Length: 412
Ligand SMILES: [Ca+2]
Image (cartoon, rainbow, N blue to C red; front, side, top):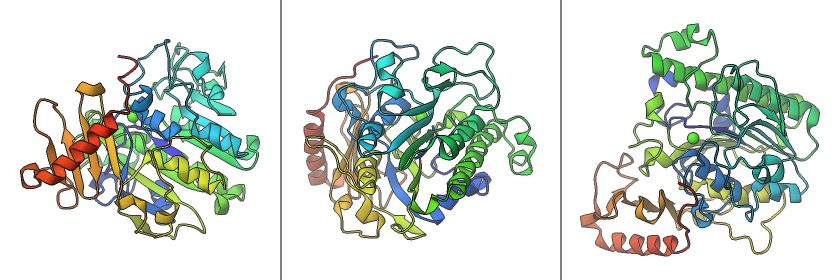
């Protein structure tokens, strides 16, 4: 599982409306979609980093256990609920060797450390971001750890994550294995690899911030290429499911581009929650598959467990569905019928639901909800609530039922 951070919806070559300056910068990531499936409406369960990762790891709407806001830097009073099983726990139970490379952002105290949450092997940082270049005195949450041991600074962080992933595949791996490569790229700071911005494909980008951002994306793609090549060399590419996606909508303040989607990281418009996603699964997913139906990060736990020949433990209250049938080309499965939900900042904050073509959005609880037809209007430019009062009433009722199962945020 290859994971980007804050990347723009349209900043990858395999996307339907790729930004012109990014068309040739992501060949390795694009190859995953070409050899497998591209999702056209893949969502994360949150519009910012830490809650999105909590949903991804647990397979549950993270607001159910109060993980609704980013964990503040240095916060020592909690982390991702210890009562929740993680995808790594579940795959470990299924006999998988498990590794995390890169960003964690799900808690700083030791009980919340990746090694305590199902990962046998860890190389990365606990905090949500850090400089890509060497730090003089890295803090304990920003230093790169090998399990719990700080490693010396040195080298470009995205390259170090790629190298660690290759090291795991080539030297540390037992089979079967689950490797989560959680890049900090292209989250700020905008520090491309020294020298890269002189490359023709980057030098031609006029605006400096966009050029530097593109450098972060290119370095990530180079390292995705290293991981894919390591799978080939190890002889396991033909029996390995590879997913690429991104933790929340693009951060336009660091020059990410989400167009034609409206909005950005931190918002419940599509630009904050709909992300690029590609999945390669030899023998299961036909090359060039396109999945139009809405899917969500919460679906990955049941999907990966099915791929592992396992199943959720009895009593697991998962919120997603197994995507295998849809990946095999069956458009009649549960994806079209179910509703998806988002909430940010507790019971007074924005809330949204999507079912089929419709999306209901309440950005301000004191105002009337907006309704968008995402098939006709992916840019959410035209509120059609007044024309479809029955749809509004149904989705409002679903939102109330969803919200009744949530807690208030556990930290500020
Ligand atoms: Ca993020």
